[in-house]
Every structure is written in C-alpha cells, then in structure tokens.
Image 1 (spheres, rainbow, N blue to C red):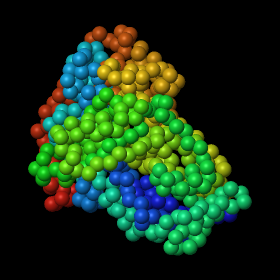
Image 2 (image 1 turned 90 degrees about the vertical axis):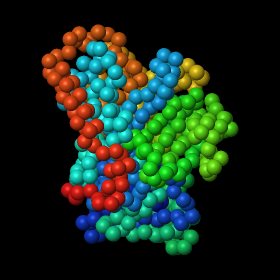
Image 3 (image 1 turned 135 degrees about the horizontal axis):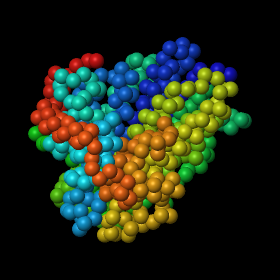
Image 4 (image 1 turned 60 degrees about the horizontal axis):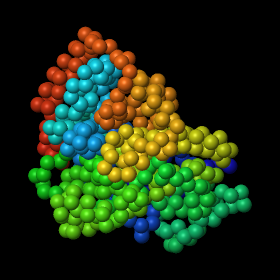
Length: 508
C-alpha cells in the first residue's frame, strides 16, 4: 500500500522542524500530503533556546531568510559554550573556565594541538582558534556585509523557542503545503496488526493517515501511550533530573555575550542565555543531591537576589530515550523520542538530526517499513548513546570534590564501556579522526578536544615531539595574526544585531 497521508502530532520546535524537513523532501510528490495536528491548549515549553551550527544548514535549505529569522525570533549569535567552575577552584582558580568553540580549526588543528600539548601555554581553545579571543572580546562572528548563513567564524544561535516554532510553521505551510489543524487528540486507535489506524480528535472527528510522526513532547501520545515502546532511562549515567527556570528582561544597551554561559555548582550547573531583549536562566540539578528549596536559593544568589521579581518554575526531567524511535507506522521525534538535559543544546540538535535523517529516506510504501525501521532505530540508538557519552564526559572529567555529586560522577560504574575505552586510549594518545569511525557521531573530534583539554585531560605519555615543527610554528604565528585582525575587524555583538534589524544581511 502506498503511503499518501502523513500526520505530525504536535507543534512546537520539533513538530515544525519535522514539517519543514519532510515538506522539503516530499514537496514534489503530488500524491502525498502532510498534516500537522497541534493542540491549542498545550503551550511550548520554551526552554531549549540554544542551537549548534548544523541548524544553519537546515534553515538555509528550508529557504528561510537569516535576516528574517534574526529579526523575528529575538536571535543572538552563539559561538561557544563557556564552561565556568567545572574544575576545582582551589587547583584551577576562582571562576576557572574554558570554551567549547564552534570554530573548527581545520587542517592545522593537529599540529597546533600537539604544539600546545608540548608546552601548554595558555588555554587550549585560545591556542588553536581565534574564536576564543573573539568571544572574550564580545565580538560577533561576522560583519553586516557577509552573506546570510556565512561568517568569518563558525556560529549557531540563541533564540526564542515559541517565535521560532511560529516562523517554522509559516514556512512549512507557505512553501511546502503542510496543512495545519488545531485539535486535541483524545484517543489513538490501533488496527488488528498493532499499527496506528486513526486518531480521534475533539473538534475534527476521526482522522486516518498512513504514517504518523509523534512530536507530542513529554506526553508521547503515540510512541508511549498507544504503542507502548519502552523507555531507556539514563539516570544512572546522567544524574540531573530537575531545572528551575526563569526569564530576566534586559536593557537595550546591555552587553550580549556571543556564547552560552554554563556555570557549575555543587549538584549540577546553571545556563545563562542572552537573547536580544532578555536572558533565559536555568539551574539544572539532581534531586538526589539537592532539594528544591536549596536550588531556588542558589539561583536567587546567582541572579543577585532578583529571583523574586520574576516568575520562575521547576521543570522535572526524565533523562533517556525510547528503545525504538520507529515502531510500526510511527516515528517519534523531539521530546517524544528522548531528552538528555540542556547541556550542549542536544535537544534541538537531535531533533534536527533525526528529522533530516527520516526525510532523506522517507518510505513511499508500507512494504518498506520494516527495513527502514531497523535502519532508523539502529542509527538513532547509536547517536543517542554517543551523545550520552559526550554529556557524561563533562561530569566525569571534573576534579571537583566539594560535593558527593561530583565524586559520584567519576565512579566508573556510571560511565559507559565505550567512553571508558576512549578515555583510557586518550591518556596515552592524542585523539584522532579515526577514533570516531561512524558518520552518525553527532559530536566529533573537535568537540571532544575542546572539552578534554579544556578540562585538563591530557596524555600522560610523552608521545609528542619535544620541539614543535617549523610548520606548526608558522601556523601558530598565522593564528596570532588572525586573532589581532578579527578582534579589530569584527563588530560588537549587539552592534551587529542592531544593524541586521535595520539593514538586513546580504542574500547569497
């Protein structure tokens, strides 16, 4: 049987990202229709306001103007995540920090890495990329004259999640003919074969489709409540399970950091994301090691005693993912598929990755479902496991001893076998591209290098040359020259955002 009618259950960022990916891939298929069913009663959670550079390619492929995106979604540029106090302050100093940069140094990376390891002068990120200095100078990653989605350095965005979903929705409806239905799904009807046969709604009656995509968030109406796919809980590896979140208005002349700030505390960390008109701040913690009252007081202290002036809420987080993201004639995306905590902006990243992967080989016939389901589930489970490892890396490398939370995070029993093997190997060798053998590693060599060496996990063996090569010395000099040039040339972050709102960026 041909697959002609596709339903996406749920809006928000996940639903509308899926609608754009599928709409773009299937726009020339006259026989196929896509309907997004969105509840008018469920607000967007609006916490996942950070992205990674891959989102630029997706937005560009959807035909969305970067200028319009920046203007409408309160966007700021994100060039890095700045990790503060993730190491012992007695050994590494108060307010110790490192940057996980988005600029990938490219062909000179290995030489510059070995050069830095041979003397460890300064911080690792500053020794291999000019972006460290650009971030610390609060510069933007591009000029007003640079074309859309192009810059002098790698970048992603901070954004207003609700406005982002609205923009994605308009694009999917206007450009890719996605139908939009506002209704609550009251019941999911299964056929005799166990597949989803139809949806019973409150205001649109019974609707039947050939294929269903579950973007219903934590409710997981299809993949969980109807199809009963088990959930793989990762709480024994990733301890945090709650967040206190608040939005803090900012003045028009406040400096906007071009990076996310992630500040560690005794039982987790605090994110601080600056948009053009407000800051989104959240204290992430483990309820096993910290109670709600302590978490609220700690966030209040971080905000200088201003928390009572703003509405805040506590969000519970169940960390893990579905045993199978694709079951029968249904695929789960976004929070319905899984959630791993906000560190490294993995939520939007994995949603974008999974939706794009699904769209590349979307089934046109029910005869294709079994084989494609096996492929999709294998890839997604691998991707989720490796992301779990990357998030765990931040915790298990920390040498903080000020609470049991950090001590327990170093317990080998909480670290996967794959991550333990890699860390053991990287005690003796510099990480290499060959260590990441799958194209479905969502985080790659450069990401690991920034975190490993930012957290002082360097090789113990003297496997490096004692004298840097002439080539690396020349590369190091070019890097220093580039730092001087970019810091002088690039505008202040807020200055560029104001110019984009007034004049717009060049079209490609």
